[in-house]
Image (tube, rainbow, N blue to C red; front, side, top):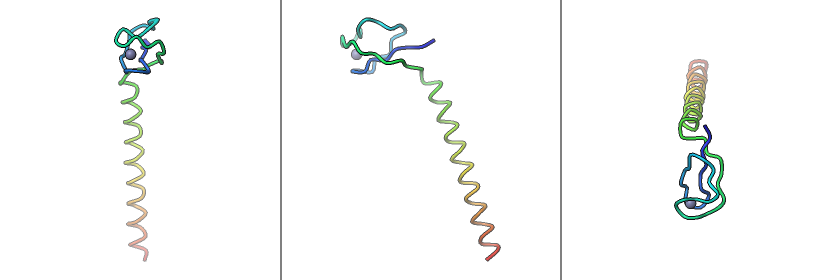
Length: 66
Ligand SMILES: [Zn+2]
């Protein structure tokens, strides 16, 4: 279920209101929730760890070879 986030104050609404209930701002953007963003963050962390491991093994191999 998509939510709507106020561009002005950041309040998240369950439905797209004609205006923000907190500040009256009329521009709201689709908001997909923290769960999805958190999942993307975990993928990024996993890729960073993988890159660090590859870099570390390359350094170890280079040290062994030299
Ligand atoms: Zn607002």
